[in-house]
Image (cartoon, rainbow, N blue to C red; front, side):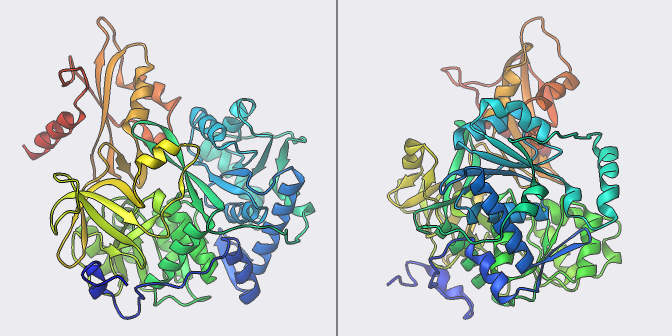
Length: 562
């Protein structure tokens, strides 16, 4: 039995949170079936005026599942989903799981190069995507294993007359009008639902071994890796979340679903938790502070998981104090460090509790969090969740660190990934025995509260999105005028961090920031684009010619401090 000495944080646990949980060994899709059985008429979500009950969502997911099987999707096959937060995103996610498939979440901001890599690496057979992103998918389809593309639009799940008007609004706002000619390989989402059968499919799934999700995460030393998360990984993390939020009542809470479902944080703490607990989701297709403020007040939202930029966006909105946010009970912030002043101000204005948590894609994602209704320490990311063990690996000795000694955080628990897809060497390198090496530097105090002092060595976190410098640098190096490039993260008042690129041009070459911006836009999602450029005659290097990124980071810090 684990002692409090081994896990000192357990002494701080409120009595309502168990030290260990009896986990259900069930599939993730069983959550939707249970919601449909126990709360059939309860509203599952509200989306721009459209509402659907749990039973209706389950039936549509079953219809999609049966149509996917008709298209040749078998148990274990990968189905990619490239959707913004919409009803279709929920139906597609659970529909793919009900068909026995493994979901591959794909960021709708990805450009052709990123889509192509992910589809080839995952071996996805089918892609479900928004009409707005279809042109990008179509350009790479023939170079990937994709056999079918299923297309849907925001309008498909809007009530009349919004569904008639929305295409015109969409074209005005985006300048994009997609005309589709459906075929045997290009299919309409709504047509599949219309003809599908709401029949359960018999599957033989081992929740502890079989994958539910391939969630791609960038790498500082290579292309994006597929994190293999089993049904058990994801259901465990959802149950841990439920226990942490012990004041939340099944079938009664209202969740703001503004975090993207294609990100593992939004997937677990919003979508999967809401489905498991039969909470009502207020689905937001994008982060719009004004719309969120109105929705919190109108729908009496009680739970609002988010990223720091989301809370900052609300606090800085001129209408913030005009809206009643008193319905909010709890907010968990993740994806980036939460400034103390943001936490304090938001709690004052809403009356709810806003706390910071910590996790990674590889941990499904939450491993550590502050207590929502218990003791917390400013500046700390909190304590490990039930059944989760965290320790610090001393940078000096390579052994377990002493309290308050900085080292690399290591995590062990039932929510830790199975490994990286088709990358056994990368998987092996990420573990020390059964401890996952996070790459994040931090320490634990005497009472078991953890603190992060430095994030992964080079990673930039902008608005909750992970940006890996090497990927941006490789795109910059493709420009004929560039001799050397190095990318770092610099502070940004809204996004937390943003991208700055240091450039050395080839002798005699000339290029403007506008030219580089246009070049990068062809190859990178918008959130990865450099916001600042600095042209230099040379970059700091080691004796063997390796660019010293850390020197550039320190120089930027000195500039800000002077």
